[in-house]
Image (cartoon, rainbow over all chains, first blue to last red; front, side, top):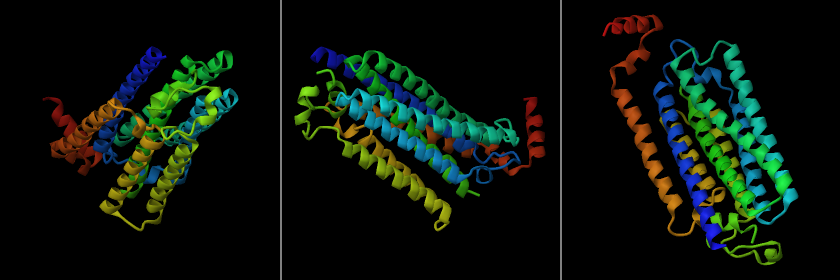
Length: 192
Length: 143
């Protein structure tokens, strides 16, 4: 037991290091956004483009999915397979809702002629928020694979490890979103 | 024993458990429902607070900016503690050390970029109109 748990904690620490390097990726994109956010090139700025109630809805969806992901891990630690599956499905639906809202937002921006080619501000906006959305999409795919795995093999130490890694990833994405919500949307709206 | 991993890894000292030992799970190091409920409600409140501050226009300018970033940082700490259970890591706290290192990198990266870019000549381009920017870019082309 000691050996396997040591190996597992090493795996999880390795994944944590990956998450930390992902933080550096997002920090670079935040820095680019911070530098370029005023360069609208005569185009619209954040205060005219963003709808705060809509973004608050996205935020609450993602936050709730982070919460259900935690509940899913709690159920997993108690060995309740049905609860784990319910948690996985709920997390997936909330995450998918978030992604759908984000794609819808992008679609509206682009169809109004405010795509990433419009200005430096919009390029950096789409890069930052799009990279986060891409991570969410990968997370959703991961969720599907986990669900299939749990359905077929049940809860064993190996799937527990995979669930733990996923939960770290998902909570991490929610933390990144806090900063996108604050720095891109909230601050983007107040700075006129 | 099958299900000890998550608790061991995220709550540190907690001993392995299985279905038979569910009864005595109330040891102090255990991750509980309460931890997630606290984390979730605090995060919702902090997000709503930030949203309300912006929509009511009671504060403005730099004051509001500082409050908003402060609220985000508080929410970061809440989620690190209650969702990622960083406080329950056993020694040596390698994950905390890695996080501290990355926070330093992020601060240098973000504030360094902003500092440098504000000192650079072409950050003033935003004061020019698009046609003036084009003229400026064309004049730099031959260099």
